[in-house]
Length: 197
Image (cartoon, rainbow, N blue to C red):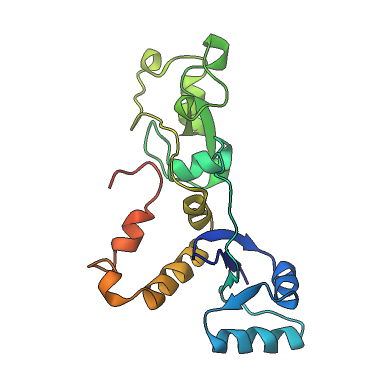
């Protein structure tokens, strides 16, 4: 059972373990949004098991979170490029994809920047090898850009089941006159990285 921890301001902070949830409940630092959720979790804790659903809790006090730099690591690059080869467009499982340096490091390319790394299938990465894309007649689907979204955005992309629960919660607690005009508006703000809205 994933547990989404929100700040008192409703900002997603992290997905925490069940053990951490128990600690926060014991110290009375978190609250449930619904009494039925609280009763369900308490019942499950009595039986020393937690169900499969997503639980959303919020801190009782707002904590100031320093702005986190989003690193250009494999996991974040896969999210940015939506698990899609940036040369041929193949969408595949993470194990079938590699990270390619657009300008090879041996030819002066930066090894760890957002702008010089893209997701590539094994076939295209092998074809490109130590060349520039144009030298082997490959074109990028789009220019690689740094991710500028907040950490919370990536957190929700990493955990789609948590994202659905969070969007449902927002729809239930935000007054109707403040909600976006269409039900898809929340998901537009949370679209996969690298897509233009």
